[in-house]
Length: 136
Ligand code: HEC
Image (tube, rainbow, N blue to C red; front, side, top):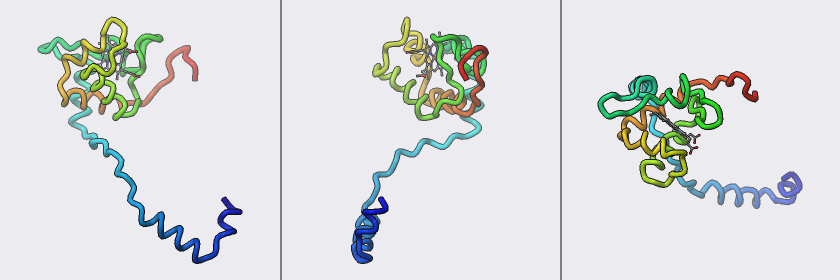
């Protein structure tokens, strides 16, 4: 960068800076802000499931606090909110469908949008702890 910057005259620098300053960057998609209510609902669903809709607790497969179990049940704790939510939406829309035995396809069929948002918010809020015997 240094040799390039050195070869520009002061007026060229102003022209280039003015050009970049005039560009408008596309606005990044803003993730919905997380709130405590979402997280509390997410924790309840994750720990207990939802008896009335037949939703199993996420922890039954993903382990306590979503820390993951073996190679088959991925860790959810500490993954990004948008990533988690997008995976759930992808299963719901059929865009992600390679899960073993359609386990997750069954799970999302029992979640509405508010609940998907809540469990994503909850797991994203959790710290990651290394699994015993796992790689650091
Ligand atoms: C019956 C077992 C089971 C239950 C209950 C379950 N899951 Fe899963 N889940 C899986 C399996 C198996 C995978 C791995 C699927 C794959 O690799 O395609 C998975 C993957 C995921 C992923 C993708 C993770 C990644 O890294 O891409 C998310 C997100 C997820 N589950 C969320 C949840 C949530 C939220 C709940 C509770 C509402 C839940 N799961 C309940 C079995 C389950």
